[in-house]
Length: 477
Image (cartoon, rainbow, N blue to C red):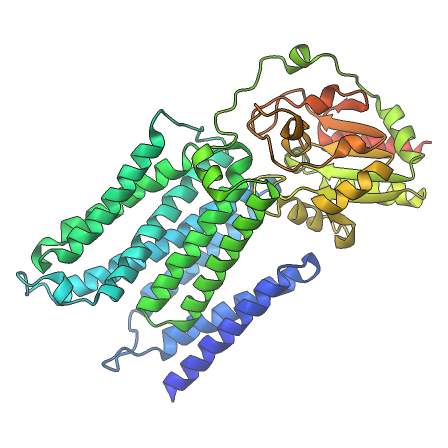
């Protein structure tokens, strides 16, 4: 009877995962979907703790360790989530994703150790004679993919917060392939070794996978980081699914498959949005090696500035205004001021919309999350294709901290690292106002020719302060 109840718990959890994932596709229901999925996970965890029995009918006994770990993890996770700033959200997501990969790798390591200790006395027996090849592949796949996800995510976390710099060297891709080959060779040697001699080969699998995860992400930077984070997220899902298969845990298996599939699809969609293949992203190191020129304004020509009072007049008497949010908006925590500006302009009869580029910010959906926090209506957020159709009938485009996603070099300069990436065609509008702290290049490290175009005016300063002052100017008109 207990097994049936546990099966029902896993079924309920699986259904809530699917419902939660579906609801996450809409900001209006995302919060509720997250809570539903969390509730399902709670049911699965409690069901496993109190109802699970092994093949010999034994239940879990080490409740102190289990609940101790749950309590510590819950406290740390809650505090981290509450204290994190929106600018640090991408690196927190990357770090937490890495913890998931590490967990999946440890599950595979624990299962291997369990089998090893169980047959330790049969030292001369080949490991392949004890463990079916399919089961071994699942163990090794979980260990390799989980380890790569962990180390890769930690490197991505370091890159996003500035602690780790992009690094590459000549022939690095060849070195990566050699390390990956060593991982696979170690896996084969471990399986074909005698039980008493296979512990070291299995440890080498983890070591080489660890190194590969570092080398895999280290050269990738710039505008490719959202794609890499999404890909690593799918890796964690696949590794978790392997753990679910090993322990015959339906909830873990379903959750891992959902995360792996969703992460893979998101990665493919983002690559499509950038007009690049995944292979090109991983091998091309897009944005990782571009060097910014020393004084972009002098190299490109002159730019013109616009005052707050002139900006207030132009926007107040416009018919349609588009706001393009970027990482600079997140850094300044200016989303609430941006929403206030939007409401103020609409009171004056101005139509205000937001143009969202798929890879704006530092992670998939970064700008959507940022604006949702400020209660910006979802129907005002237009995707790139929709926004590009409306720019030609737009009076003013206000760019807040975005850079690479509005850079015309992606369409006009074949030598540019971002050439071929679809961008927001903001220059089709009558007026383009760019808010930046300085003329420093964007995350991809390249100059933006848009800043020197005739229709473009620069509005320098911190996004939050600029918006607050702009709101004051508009109110005084």
